[in-house]
Length: 290
Image (cartoon, rainbow, N blue to C red; front, side, top):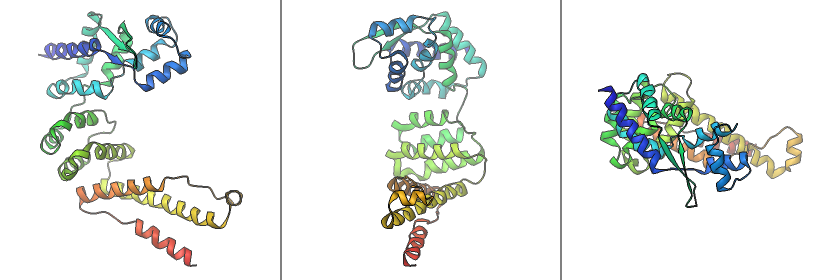
């Protein structure tokens, strides 16, 4: 029954709030920059004062469901079919119980008990993306090919992406999970890389072509950087800047690593890739010999 699943999720969220929410580095930095590093007593007053102009923004940060919270809720979300109307019901359930959260201050024994404001509750539930259910094929691929200890983290990552899960994307990701099996322990880092690239796409075109276009672009950046290095051997930086040359300011090692990662994924998923590194080296050899 819909109400039963909503009550189950509301109880789990309540338990998480009561167990304690630890302020992470970003929240602490916001507090220090906004409130001129407050004492514990001052922070407690800021949090409890619902008339403060900066308080709402702080509440949103405190009650932001980070990955550790998402992981605790994922099994419920994955086994139930939540709809948009369920979000309002869950917010109402939590609000009617006047749920209280334990806000824990890092590197201290201090904590603050605070009723969760309705606005913060709404933001919290919205950010959980409870209505975004994984395609059955993706769920099956994760179950079959991802280490059990990592499956929840993978589902959480997929739930919180912003792109649409088209047939092209689903097919690509299913193949990715199947063929990247030698990287089982490192699948999270490879998945984050893939999801970041998929976020960059502005259409549903061929993913292989997109990966190769990305690699070609990186090769172009690498070529510019190496050309600048050669110019710098013969001129000082001031002269080059006056001539209109600009230092690309890239980390060559990171660029090469990114290109290598694209290669690994392309070969695993599509069985092929394209070699631009040798092309860059060939151009540099030719230009140096002129």
